[in-house]
Amino acid sequence: MISPVLPSYSRANLSFVKGEGSWLVEADGRRFLDFASGIAVMSLGHGHPTVVGALKDQADALWHTSNLYEVPQQKALAERLVEHTFADTVFFCNSGTEAAELAIKMARKYRTETGTPERMKILTFEGSFHGRSMGAISAAGSEKLTKGFGPLLEGFQSLPFGDHDALREAAAQEDVGAIMIEPIQGEGGIRPVPDQCLKGLRDLCDEHGLLLIFDEIQCGVGRTGKLFAHEWAGITPDIMLVAKGIGGGFPIGALLATEEAAQGMTAGTHGSTYGGNPLGCAVGTAVMDTITEDGFLEAVNAKAGFLRQKLEGLVASHPTIFESVRGQGLILGLKCRVAPTDVVAEGYNHAVLTVPAADDVVRVLPALTISEEEISQGIDRLDATATALEERAA
Ligand SMILES: *Cc1c(COP(=O)(O)O)cnc(C)c1O
Image 1 (spheres, rainbow, N blue to C red):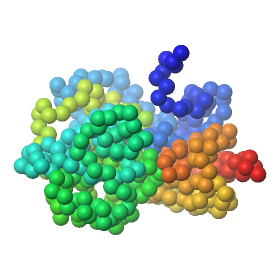
Image 2: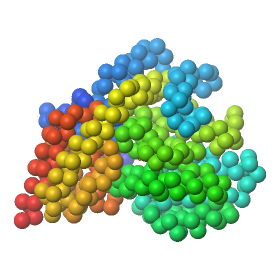
Image 3: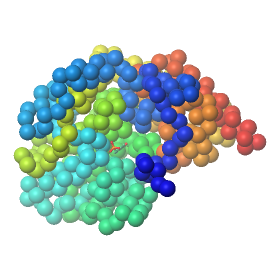
Image 4: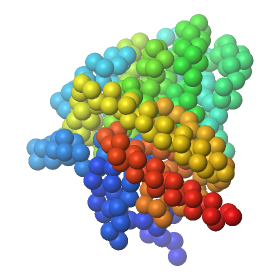
């Protein structure tokens, strides 16, 4: 008989009952070091007092009114996002997928609005992930996501990752209107787009009048050591998708845009019942205020350097298990010589949580608030994990 919960996930046999910073307590009492952060969601760790306080205060005051009325909490969060980014305006939704869906609609509406309706095509990249809606799976295009779900949404062309000639050729086509890309592919295996390539993308978009859409749902909100990953390249997109870390565990997503890109999205063109509800926005504001505090991102960069060095050491000690480290800041990947799912599963026996990704990568995504002491403990557990895998192979 089918499980009462739709069996669309393959889950580990673990049930966590309590979270404290970088630690998760299992029902049997074991304490796990959390290098997963709920897939880059728990940006400030579990139970961060500022975030919990913001949610509790808002829960006592008001939960929901609807977008029929002004929602001051939306305004507060939008003002912070606008202040700290390229964006002029923000739409709030409940997930990354919804932000990706709106990006597709906004890019198309921009074309209608600016009298270029023949330029509806959006260029995307192999290995990308933008969510699970029909629009998002059509955009990413991989068979793993789309198989059995056709007919897909039209208007996307997926390009090989890192093939500059293919990109240049595709961008010059007359039916292309936008490029959508993750500055660091998350699900695709922590594959960063080098800074000079992000700059090249911006130039290409300017040359052909294309909208540049960055999906920073996984790599944004402080994770790379800048507030948003593209800041390292010194360029800005026209549209950006944000979710995961901005909510610190509360479901909220956002689309940020320039006034130019957003011009078609007038009253009545898009909406969401829950999107931008007071609870999510109060939490998002608390997360933003914490991450933009003086010294916060400097501390992330210091920890990131420490973690990276430790991971490089781990790779050197276990050359039959690991091949290399990649990524930036606290969005790091261990390229494996064994199945990454085996590394993650063996990690459970050593009370450390990591996340598998494509391209034989295990993701290491600690809370931005993790301490060096905790990083060391996590590395010791990964070391024991690798040793156990070596002994099994021997
Ligand atoms: C997780 C993720 C999404 C989808 O976000 P949901 O909140 O799961 O809908 C989209 N893009 C990227 C890069 C992601 O990591």
